[in-house]
Image (cartoon, rainbow over all chains, first blue to last red):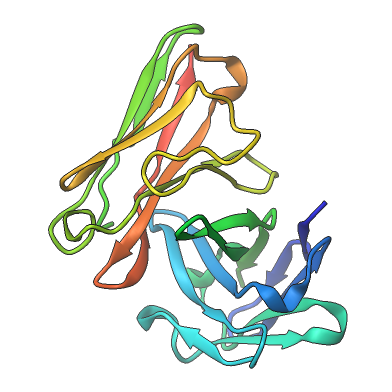
Length: 121
Length: 108
């Protein structure tokens, strides 16, 4: 059964960095692009961007260019989200989501459970 | 959010509730499809409806979706206690993926 297993909660101080992992199992990792979505208080769900699991090329949504870095380790079917120079407004739940072709549509058909990142001094 | 959802809806078990998702001419009105997701605490979000009206296998037919012009709706019939969750619509706006603000469904 396909699933995305995300890393656990993180508590970080402002200015630090954090890396969230998303490990895929039950399907061929390179067939589906991996997207990242943030759920933040008072901001709702925000699409952050995606990374090609074929080329490793990341694409960032406008609000997430700069401190956010997507990467892969194909050997372990894992996608990573690194957030640098953390600020308190980065406190959120971060989800990875697989993009699939379903019929004629591209949909997020498989999600991780989310990784809570809390930034506090 | 570019897609507007009511913050909350509620209904008693067995009743029917409708969650709306209002867009504009740059997203739903431009013909982009709408997808709906269910978010429960500490579980992976679940795709409920894709491409406006389609249910993935395993999703009960109590859940249905529709789209007309610049708006979309998710209808849940025969409300059950475990339907209590946050529901989000998702589409594209000028090609970029966007989500609605989310609707909290309370089962009374």
